[in-house]
Image 1 (cartoon, helix red, strand yellow):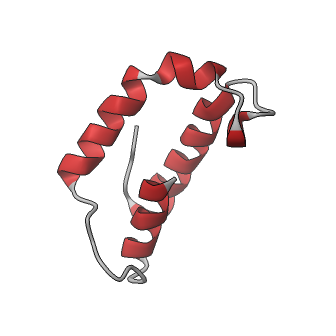
Image 2: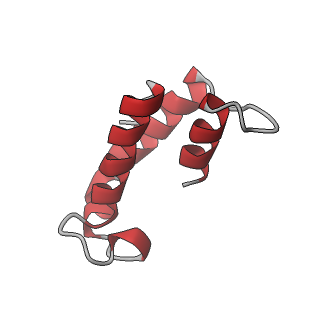
Image 3: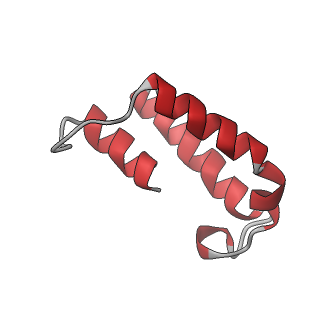
Length: 74
């Protein structure tokens, strides 16, 4: 969620500092894909009422980030 907020703020020129770069995005992708199975069964926070748990929220955020800011985290 922190990365999502930072991506959005940086792309909208509202961030007081910048740290999102390609290296960080690649590490985030790697980590999310590595833990996909666990995220699909995690029913906490935004995933509490979703069939695919937190993974569903992550894919929703990815779709928005890709469409609006040209940044994919998956």
